[in-house]
Image 1: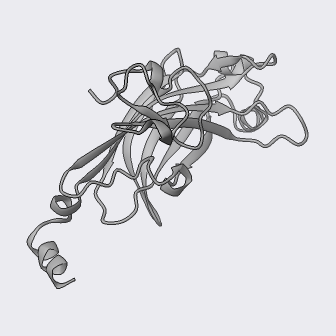
Image 2: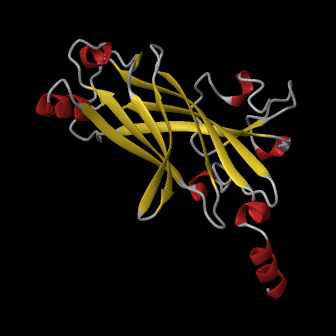
Image 3: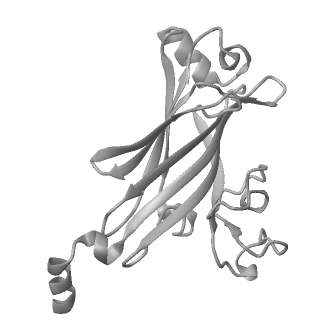
Length: 214
């Protein structure tokens, strides 16, 4: 304990514990009446590091015509790394999103607030929800980068029992995973495996996206 205290006085926390970094490669969609994905364009996605009771904005991106976006963030803390996304979907009546999406919460908010406003939702990432590996980025004396594939959907809420809001799923891609750790191990490329409790089977998973850690 004394040695650790002396080291902490002699070196900054960054030198002892390193950076926790995260790259998010994501897509935002909604559902039409048939349940088909509709990419959401021009939504604003902001990545925050969760410092309770404050939050630090790290990165902001606007979704492409395909609903895609990329974010990068890093955190320097001794214990605990949590991030969250703020998702803002435009309410413009001329947008493909407004014309086709059937998400109850989205449509109700836009009708109430007007077409020059946004529907806002947030999605919080807690390390323990993903087996302690997603976004943990723990690396003593160096840097750790977690690359994360994420797909979020403005919910298709058409029934009385449906919940409003955003549903997200995805996983992280990490080096040197053992085959027995996951049923989604890429035995052909032998370079990464799929981890995380929210596997959705969508096409951006680690198996079809080589070079994430290039």
